[in-house]
Image (cartoon, rainbow, N blue to C red; front, side, top):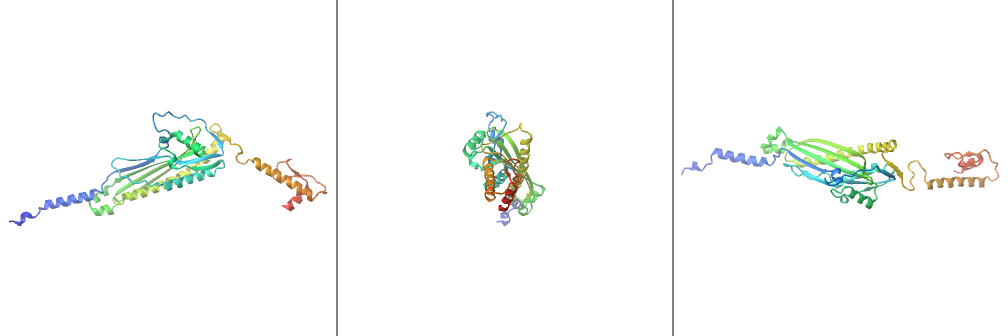
Length: 325
């Protein structure tokens, strides 16, 4: 028997090797992939076409305000040909961002309290009815709703031809990754359904990776994008808060400002403070007259920092008080 008939032909060997190389490198070919995750204030407040449009009225802010901060429910979508990449925006990062935003509001003199609203308190498409429930449950007057939108696009460059070799898939960073992140905080007066102001935050990251570590690089870029966008958001929020304070003073027709019972606003002295001042001044008078009962009075002088005519001390008593204090 001719042994040569048992030897595989050269073309068959080459074809087999080519098929193995194709399948082993084909798993790293993805060409274009698009990953998208987002939450939307518009979809939360106006979820359906059949829902009637809510006409906002002129906002009435009763100071001091109680402010709530919350993330609107998210929705994640993946386009055809994409790979699912787990969200890098964790609950811990969301809580940290809410605390940063709360600190901006807490610095305002007309804000009484800040409430961080748990994510489970808002339902997808909850609309203003959901906000009314928060108002009744947590006692907030104004709500800051935070939304985000991140899109990641992965595409192969001309260097991706090196992926036909297994070494190239591990070494050549021929995959291009683009990550665009948008965040925004919109502040609503719940009772009037009126938008008071909004602040955006944006971030764009460009990078490259090999097919082997593509998912890990995408997650890293996603996390970095959220952090950068959140920092930009808090910076812009401070500017918008300052602009809103100026607008409320210069455009009184745009918003109605009222004070809750017992609140006098910045620079005003409340009833208890005024009473304490009166008692202190009266006490000084009594002490001075007890120590110097027979001194001849001289032309009276007003107390320092007191309105003219409010309290009068004679000159001898004034010197005595300065010696005591």
